[in-house]
Amino acid sequence: MSGTQYERELKRLLEGNKEMVGKYIRSYSLGPRSASALSYQVRKPFLVVRSAGSKAMDLLAVRMNTVLPIEIKSSSSDVINFTDSNGRNQRQYSELLRLIERSSLPLFYAVRLKNAGTEPWRIFIARRLRGWSWVPVVSETKSGNVSIKWSDGIPLSEFLRRLME
Image (cartoon, rainbow, N blue to C red; front, side, top):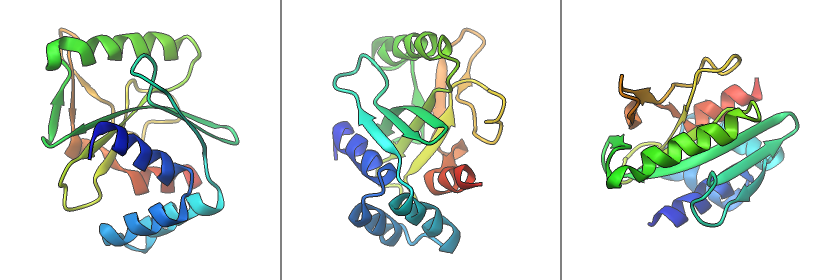
């Protein structure tokens, strides 16, 4: 799958697409709590807008008083260093933070590990914000370079379960 396909996959999960949610639950043999959190999306879906191009965040998910600006990354490696790919990801991170912080919203990173063998989506937040302390923060070096370690993230189903509380 390509990055665009992963964006569409996450979009359909958040929108509560019944077929996609069922396939996700079966494919990763999710337990009852995880399956329940994903099935909740079918009953109470997010309105999700997908951004064209790479200028802004990839998805904007909205449900009642919850707004989730989401940037999506995928990798076959457990670690994504934003200084790779000529620093494009690092520049994008800085630009997105400036854009989001002006509106006092959190910025989330959804990272999909290719061939994970387990639930592949992990969620991170760009900066520590009140009310979101349960979401792991992306790592930043002293020089400001960003790195995301997939295994440090919160699984998508757990993230969604916590939003239900």
